[in-house]
Length: 523
Image (cartoon, rainbow, N blue to C red):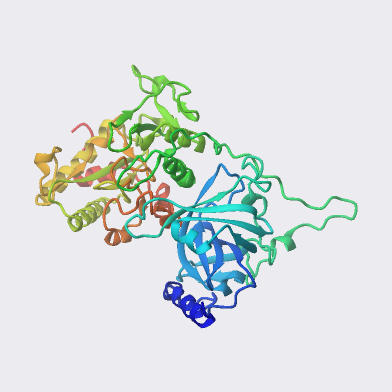
């Protein structure tokens, strides 16, 4: 291909990159830049809304780029999610600095690793076919690697790939060595990601104490063993569990590994119920509150006294427990509105907006905002998440004061009030016949033993939607309550749990709200 044609195509490939950036504000490079003599690669550590790593390979005059939320791993048993993003200019390979607030990707960037790469076979064909194998020759990453595209494209959103270390002499078990923890700093400036070149703070090297002549040099503390069973054997990993998306059981386990740090704060300390799908979402589903001891390593049995007359409740506090549940065909995880340490007094209530037949999405959005208006008038903080299915979930944090029956009774009074003041939109009775063209705000999830699907849980429905926390001002931009799926969730991980960051500070007592609504406990 003539050099002029290659340059023109590279320039066209950067259209998305340039469209997303205001180069009057950001110091990121605008021009294509000049390539290396062969194939260069770079991994940039990027602390935007959430820390992640940008993996880039030089090919055809641009840097083909993937966002890797957890960063590369030297363990062949660990497959890291990599979201294919827009091409970047070759000049970006040397970029370190700060992307200003309100700009695309705002945050700090360092060059975490760099070097050259060699494709195995035809790189262009491998990229097009979704299986690119190559060798890396970097300061931190070496040996044979692969990028494999996951099946399905998730409504034309960014493609999800897996970054996998091949089994060779450069491979190391994650339990023994986590390269992103052990070697966190820039290979160019020596700085850490929060103090890149151009910032006022000294680099990580400058901040190290100077060793005395006869004392050993300062060394990094070896990484601690992660509790998760990263090398666990996944049975029937290749089995497709959802025909619509093509997601396999192995990919579902990889998803829960990917989101574990975001999901565990929602699971930890609360009884959990599980929805298992041994034959996939089209087969029979099993709702499970109890399990045989040691059936799922890491899934705790709670004190039987918490639920007298029944088998012990379950609780998941660790990544190992979450992954072993997924290995046992668990797709959905539901939590109580109370913690196991104070199980008699809920610390939140949940309103599940469940649309009836004939309710379109704009009507759902409007109804969700009406619920918020009512809660605002009652002085209660409200937090929003997609259900991953058809409805929206409004979660209200409260102080532990009332028992289950009182909290459930108050939630029912709220729903009855909505049905009275907006009868063409809301209904206070459950059942499909009662809510044709209207929305039932399900208050029944607030009784003892009732549960609601956890944030970041996958739903056992065609398409595998995910329940995701959202800011209220994002509601108009959602296209459904299953706006994100397993296939495209990676684009949301930078936001993470930020929409619910103020939940603990937002806890209010219910007495004033009960009085304002004209409802009292025992009424």
